[in-house]
Image (cartoon, rainbow, N blue to C red):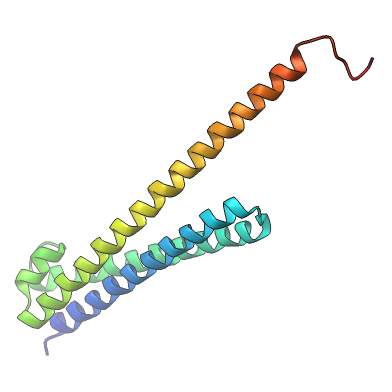
Length: 149
């Protein structure tokens, strides 16, 4: 096996790990939504910290992916894109790269969906909070009742 082929399989492994990490982040977002509704703020804070840690870990993998893609592309004299790398490698490596890329794209779609749902929930919560504050303000600002007498 050539050095570039072994790097291609390593790259495929990194991409698959990235997909797995994104799925974990999506699951954590689901858990955060549950915690937001449940009022367990300590658990929510812990989940947010875990989300930050996982995002950092993912970015580290992204760095590995970028480094490997550039290394392979330099060896094979092609662009550091999956489609280009796959076209420059043997069938086994190309298949591994393309399959890993599909998994990553699928995981990214799941994560995007979870982010959209969480964003809508937070926007809705903010809107309800503002509405309640507005109603409370109008109650305290009007009329002749005063706490001072």
